[in-house]
Length: 187
Ligand code: FNR
Image (cartoon, rainbow, N blue to C red; front, top):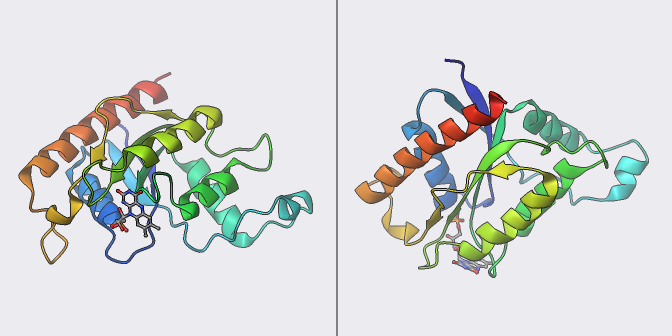
């Protein structure tokens, strides 16, 4: 069975980010048919349409666009900021969506996971993100939904997953995502 690459985009720049730890744990627990590649978004300049119009996009935009375009699928793992998506993630989405007609998101299967120390598990961010994905023609896995609350209890001091329920959930999510991506790639 061939391996498919999943571009993983983490919506937090925090060095001890729970979202990044969850994404890493998922990558370790997932079946081998998926190869996870983290694509960084922290250095992308704010989107400015003039730079594309002038034909001189920043090199970091071009590199980001190429990495996402080359991937078979996209996985967003994001915190919720003020009941929505962090600005840094929205900026990355906007950068990847342009120039008009050349969006790197188009027709990609994928997934959305939101992670929060709070009880609601980033539900608001998860669904605001899904609103953009409808327009961008990304096909995120619907079930299982992934709103991971109580994230401060998931990891030990070394950043290793210590919570069995979360481990089982992520293992199952990885299986579902793998099937979803394979179904899409098979046409
Ligand atoms: C937050 N946080 C937060 N949490 C939440 O569940 N809902 C929210 O609306 C917000 N809003 C919010 C705004 C801003 C500006 C910050 C900095 C934080 C708390 C957030 O979930 C917490 O900081 C997480 O630890 C962020 O995820 P990472 O960085 O651990 O991945």
